[in-house]
Length: 362
Image (cartoon, rainbow, N blue to C red; front, side):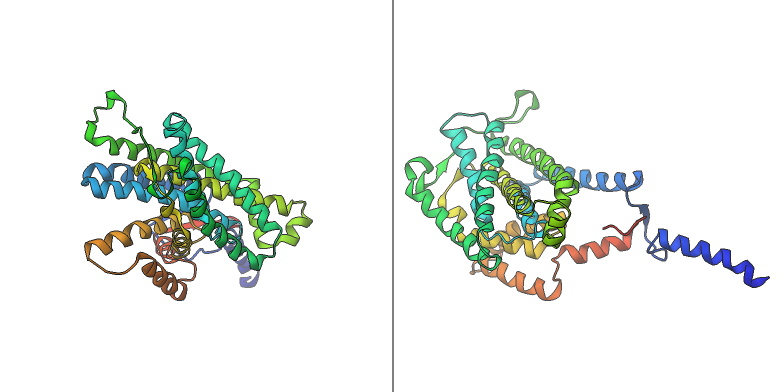
């Protein structure tokens, strides 16, 4: 009797274990992946984070407030590089070029052609996508081991190109934006507080960018990009055009990076060739690797590093270059947390919030 009675109970426990791969885990909050509770948790957490970032400059002095705006813009720029490196599995050491194209495209559209601010900002990702696809096509014609030197060459040539056509780009002196982004009168901003309105616009565009990137990652195109990165042969067997997918992925990452460049020039209304040299591209790459190349939190951490390191060097009068600090951080994070700083943060979050999955998908 005892033997026959224990079998159904064992089957029940086995079924429960199959449905929930980690039934023994405990946390402050337990939700099922894909449920309304999970969506509320993710959506509420994201809204809270952006809300804090949006309000923070209203509580800080102007210098620190502008740093928050730069942090948001850099976060968008790094999202593009993160997509290329972490999702598409391709190497890009010229992301600063795409960011610079977005900055120059926005500035020229505003100052030379007199387009409205939002129209000029919308031009940035279009230009970034075109140039990104060109670099992606170039990458298809060479072996993967040579992609790094080729993208490095693009990063080296870009400042020379800008200086060569200084009559159009401003050259070494830089090209300023002649029209400020003025807030609507009914909002009651003073003339000296225009930077707060600019910050709100940057945050709003960043929210749209995050939603778009997230939807692309979860879309059939994003799944094709991931399949191509993990196993090109299997992806081709499944009917995926591997070459086109790689080019489009490179172009999309460049478009997001160019959008970040447009946001950067809204906050700092002047762009110069030396702002997007080779070391800037290498700094972007190091920031993504230190923050984390897969999770979107990694882009935020990388932007925080890019903003925080130079600021701390000024505060504590550290007489060294920020690129040296970024290089050391990259070495240390590679040794201690190979997946970036987002990995230990994710582990801490998983101790507080347990997400149960009904399948083996990540």
